[in-house]
Amino acid sequence: MPGHRIFIILENPTERMEYTRFFKDLGFLVDTTPDGSEALSYLIEKKPDMVIADIATPGFSAIEFLKKVNEAKILCQTIILTAEPVVEHAVTLMKLGALDYLIKPVEMEQLELSAKRALLVSKQKAPSKKVSSSRRKKVKIITRYKGIQNLLTLVSRVANSSASVFIQGESGTGKELFAKYIHEKSDRCDRAFVAVNCAALPENLLESELFGHEKGAFTGAIYRKTGKFELAHKGTLFLDEITEMQFHLQAKLLRVLQEKVVDRVGGTEPFDVDVRVITTTNRDAKEAVEKGDFREDLFYRLNTIPIVIPPLRDRRGDLEILCKFFIQKYCKIDGRHVKGLTSKAISFLNHHPFPGNVRELENIIHRAVLLADSDLIEPNDLLMDGVESTGDLPDPVADQGFGPGPSSLKDMEQKMIFKTLDQTEGNRTHAAKILGISVRTLRNKLNEYKEKKLI
Image (cartoon, rainbow, N blue to C red; front, side, top):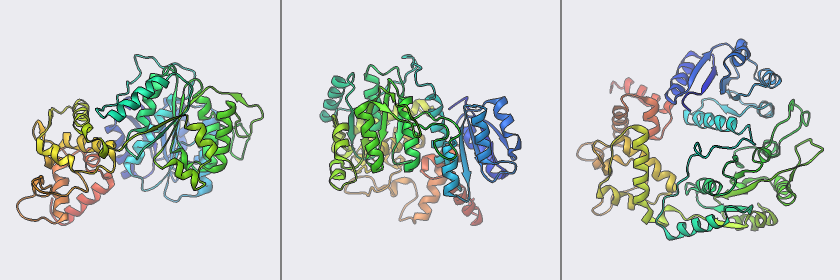
């Protein structure tokens, strides 16, 4: 994200300042305005990568703004904020090309995700453009587990085929990472990898998102929209949480897979597509078929190459090498010098069930790298939920440095917040990320401490 420009249209000065600081910390070049009357002129002159606009900003009409952006053919992703959501407005704005419609108060984590998505969508606007192999980020799957190694061997054997791949596994096991690995190993690696979360969009928007629409196809469709299948032509289309797709869309998807042609919504002339489809779900797909939630014929069409990724708790042998990988990764990113974990810290991790799988482990190690006071991570650096002390394992409460004897949850929370702020030199955005809370929540906690004269 460093170097990308964002334009914030927001009347409230406190929110405007908070958003500015947040996005500058992420590396954005930030411009703001409390009045939306000159927004279009700014876009034409500065050409920002994205716009974040509050629908209530004086001089700003989101619908008119997006219509003018489309008429002027400005390539810019727009995120609309509102304190008073209206379904009809949301549908209209999304049809006009708004990337997201977020309800205030907005968590900063959600804004960051939307911003990353906006940059990804911008990159995918040129589907035929090849990706330089020197610029392509290499995908690594770190494992000693025989079952994962067998899956990687299978992937290598089928990567260059056009066969559909169906990946099943719990949340956080690395399903999207596997999909990207397959794409990178294939002869489509220099073409687009286009991702769609089928659970994130309502039915009427998902159809347009996947297949595109023609100008005039419905009220508000003032331009032709390129669908994800078209964007992924000659490349890979990744459909996440496929079992959440509505039933009638499943039938249309099945036709595309069988005929290899796409009909835009409102279109009259189908066009050919050459796309390798990889799908995922965190549900039991066969159970979804039995319940009638998922078409059996679509399941067998997608399940040509089945892959089931085991949860982290079933491959404990990967724990230490994954920790080593994440320590090196975040030391490089954050400029830290942590070398590894103590044996007690490793034992502590080995007794954790990891309901969030590898994603949870990565977050734990990232926080630990930032919080560690020495070159080895201790148990008290592992801020984790759901782990209780057992036997000779370290007591997570006693080891947090909260002093002898029992502490209340409020005291533990307060001291953890102070310690994290100290580690981040007062950077609230960074501290909130480590603590796993929003900047707003952290600010409220600090205000509470001020009222109690604790700071």
